[in-house]
Length: 242
Image 1 (cartoon, rainbow, N blue to C red):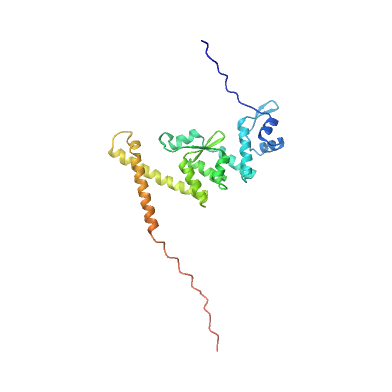
Image 2: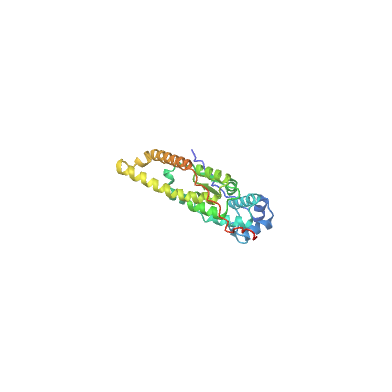
């Protein structure tokens, strides 16, 4: 019986005019974006520029971000921060994905902008990439944790600036690392077996959750300090002379 052959996957490529038509923009706009370095360079074959699906996806992302109020300058800065971020492979090495119980979330740049309306700035994007919350996978962004994504966006909707959320996350990360080291050393000192830290991790999580709950109860039960007294008026009103 003859072995069935499969045709190799072909990559769709576009000339300049074809790409502009597929993206729904004039050719002059496409060339302007290329001059502003909003698009990666095309593949050159003589004098012909060939674009692919990644270029088309980038053009659609630019259009979506423009509709959401971003400027071309801001999009260029976001693109630079995005392209300099860690890829998914580096993120796995950084966070130890093999142990993780978190669910990663794939997002387009415009979907990320919708989660944090008005707060997706180059500075916040760079901070998220540096923390390892975000990684790059082709034309998509991967957030490491559905729970962290939902909590962060909920805090922003309540009025907390995303920059403050990320800075708090950085501080929480340091405390979490210290607690993880504490429990790992405790388990390694008293319980044999390489699988003991993984097997007993739910107990450590329960302790941390209970202690955090009680700490917040204690903090909220403490009455706030009284307000400072109003400043004394240094100017004394003199009685009129008789």
